[in-house]
Image 1: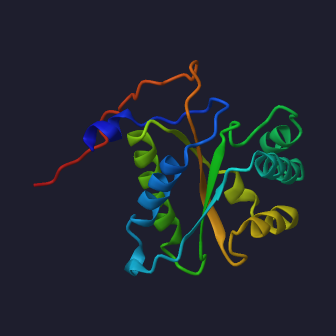
Image 2: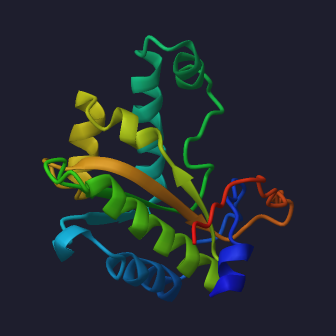
Length: 184
């Protein structure tokens, strides 16, 4: 397990190959075994494998970005080459009931489990935040609800999944000094 944790990296370049069904099932199973507050398991995982749906989701996110007051988001929204999920063949939307104060932490635990499970079966992954900031846009909300995201859920993150492209850069993990304190 420690070696898998050390091996995991965010990958932003994927092969044009579908994700194997057994790999997806392993990754989703890892998600539902994550810890959750009071063991309520109020989360939901929506896996999108349909390329046309992914392209449409990206278009709607860009449309929401273009309406933003933030210049950086406007730039992304108006960039014809911008793809928030890096053209991965699969995207898992992780959502939860916003009334549960621990919902973001539950989702983060599930996402980390997905990352580790993906790494263990040689599937590349990356945390995708863009939908979390745009899920309340009217058009985005209607679309993700049509995909199966519960209408009353907030999106807390997404996981891009696929097989790393041969030229995908792998960054060395540079550990920051003074990040651990042990009090005895």
